[in-house]
Image (cartoon, rainbow, N blue to C red; front, side):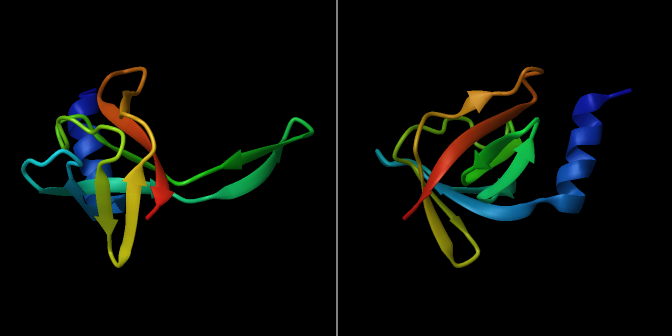
Amino acid sequence: MDFAADLGLFYDEFAVAATHTPNGGGAVTTGKVILDEPGQVVFGGEIVATEFSLRYPAATFLSVKRGDAFAIGSRNFTAREDAQPTLDGLERMVPLARA
């Protein structure tokens, strides 16, 4: 099983386009992302809340830092922290704030 190839197929099917603009200047890039939106769920008797975050293949945006801007459709976001790798290293996640 080729996880990297399967990941590409997953993003082709379920992801949306996002534009990344580095806060300190640099090239503006566009790529496919999964946007996780705020919500709440009861898990094990406790409320688990989520906030806006992005997940994307590691090669999509090579360096995402706190303060970078993302545009997804007509909505704008700012990275609250530097992007962090997932356990397998194939993806990155970054928490977002509405801009």
